[in-house]
Image (tube, rainbow, N blue to C red; front, side, top):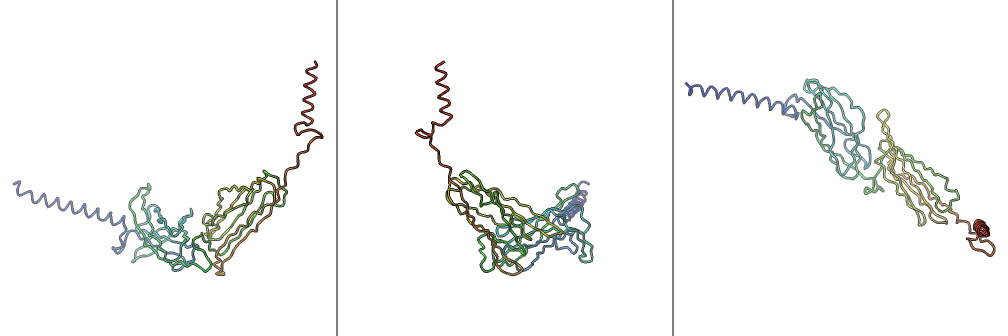
Length: 316
């Protein structure tokens, strides 16, 4: 009897194991959103604007659309891998809701946007986005990926790709001094120079550093740049403020060097430069020391008074 039952028990075991593997395979397929099925549970689409060619330093908008077949339980966590040939920024803005029909099925989800700035010329590969799926408690339920994009990056004539390149439709800058440079300074005085740049479609942190320098006899003390970016109705404006302090060690006339910002104008397709000219500063010599007649610098009124007081004390 026992021998007759063994095949039956093994058969039930095989059926149970097949069901477990089938369910496990379905869960794995949902987590990975494999495109082999007619109606995948999750679809990830990537696109860029511009989508074929861009100027080095130009703002490239990279879109990652994540669509769900049975509704989005919780917004996914979307990232783009770091790149050596480009800077990537993800601004803290609300993702855009999406809906689409795929193979006759209704999908809903969100669009996530990244800002990319190429730092090298040639063919640029934008890596596939990494999408982490989450449940209502923000626990990971799976990982899906997008599809890598390819972009051709051009370097306009006159642009040095070894330096940080700014490409925009608008860049403005202004300079201020405290106090004014035509003030007569003396050794030990300080002069503060502030330069603020504002640029369209580029974050302030992507603007190149300003290198302040000074001649011998003047020390330069730089400060960390202040970044103040803002987004209004989807339009990014980057602002960067650089400040340095000149301290004059000796008397004389000093020429504080000019500083400049070169950028590529996307509207006129030309290279432009904003320059703040050099400034000459006069530092006065200290007044000469006045010697009393027939005396030394130590024989001043105070010393004479002290000697007089000391002699009176002795006579008492």
